Image 1 (cartoon, rainbow, N blue to C red):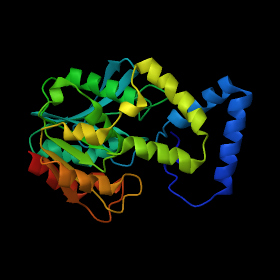
Image 2 (image 1 turned 60 degrees about the vertical axis):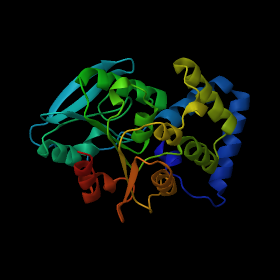
Image 3 (image 1 turned 180 degrees about the vertical axis):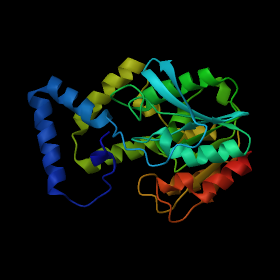
Image 4 (image 1 turned 90 degrees about the vertical axis):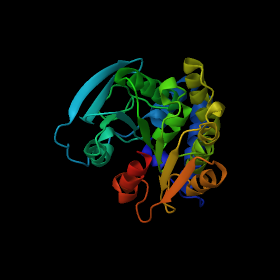
Length: 281
């Protein structure tokens, strides 16, 4: 959804929030079809941010065709393949520093832009489309040594049941392990009409045969027997660090690495992330 909603973390009363609730409920009552079309665009359209990191030398760009349109891929290095999955309103560019580190360790790093993100095709994004996109990328790379995800990209990895991921090590950076609670709380905080939100979600569920309430990254992580390292900052404003702590305590094969003063985005190129990759390898 739009960053204006997704990144609204204020819990206090807001006149603007109250007006959003009133106007979206009235819009849905008076013109339901138009309201749902508008809501789909607002809630499911990511922001295509400008690239922040310079391209590493030797980066190979490609295109993979998926059911969601053309997905842009970025490959660096040689050797066993690690696939990297970015988060909402992100792009593969955020992984460039980590990709360079992976390549220096004797591996191939393959990142890609999710549907509706970066330079990939598509106007909207959501977990079902993300999962289909990841499956397409996995189809295109042969054997996989491991997978790295950030934010909503971690939920995508945990939701993906592709056989190539079975038993493979995972690195989850600032994971959203309570995806559904996080999403619903965000909508409520924004003041947006829950009924209108549910109408948009229902159409996505029907199109992909993928019920929203089936998305449960924490439970899916519990079912995996592969080694997993979580790197997370307690001060992360967008992904719940407490859920990462709970995973560390409750799941035997999960290890939490705490990074301080890195936030939700900067953490992707932190020393803790680089060291976690080395440990997984």
